[in-house]
Image (cartoon, rainbow over all chains, first blue to last red; front, side):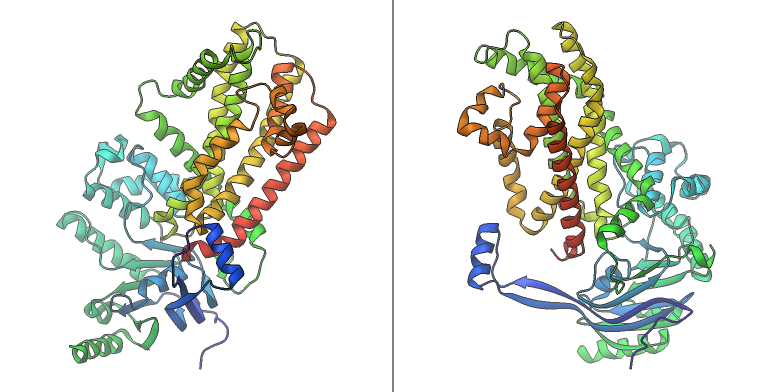
Length: 254
Length: 274
């Protein structure tokens, strides 16, 4: 049923991807204990499948929705696509740089100034020093941090940190952008600005992966979507179809 | 961006993880620089004496040890010089391995979200440690000056000796970090292991003391001894280490680095499951 090779316009291609966590039935904390149990053949595990035989093809430029309840495997799917987690089995094929836009400000160092943190954070996102220098003015202007940019981050409010994080993460149009839940950054005015920039990214050639439990967003924004439950794909289709299916499913469950 | 710039990640391609990781470290070389800078700047920003502490710390420890031990080991007034050169070496090794362990175990906030070459973080710790080691050479030089111990031409080979120690430390850090990811007990026990290791290495006392014990077996099986030995000959005894001295140090350093890199990279795909 699944395609065997990624096509010309494919951005993300998953083939029979499973992620299984081994949960030891009892806790083994020391090497000695492990060695003894291993020799006696008493190391036993249960397998918990966070993802189970996922087949998925996402085309370039698509706004792709991932929807499902808590524990459906949405985060694990993102981890596998963004190369943070290696699949237990199956094949993951991704074309281009994956930029996550989650937990803004992760990787900032409190003692460094905002300016220094732009460079630190930019390189953590996979950009070179030169690329960051080219964008630094944009980033500073968009973040509206002003003169505080030369103060240590520990003196920033959480809103300022989120603004700076958002400005760095969206300064480049990535090949694949991952949006985890809806972003609410800063005050109303800044949120509007964020919204505009998101629209720009969505309209650009970037492939966008939108992860949420709000089916309204999926039907409004997404050309294609997938519904996950307990690590399995329940259905795929257009954003409208999938969100409708999801709404019905939730109704039945209640 | 043109088509050719776009990198493809394919989990099916069974390329050598050993090589892939080296490529990734070079690709992320700007991040490596930022990480080293972050650690150095962050450390010195909040204390008023800043960078001076790196120089004062070994001096302080040297004074304490000299007061406590100098009468026990008769080393005719040169004991402080012996102590401080050994301590600088030891501090580099002990701090680098401890920080590497913590970085690998607790760096998860980032590792859970973005793909990054994990080895870069360990390398950055070693590079930061090397900068501290260079700074510590200043107070050491001062002590040598005060005690009127002359540096001899062999001392010029010190950078090469330090490079070997750094290779060994990187390999060992990668190895211990990998083991600690799978066995948390190792992380807890490591400081105790370091303590024991310090006392089994001729740093606080003269090596003659250990040469008689078990025919010097304790020295022979201690890989750190070979690096300390080269350093002490270069600086403190002012003689050229023998070819054998160098050869053993080079072999241990290279072997440790290869083993550590291999173990770490071959297991790093499983780190996320722990």
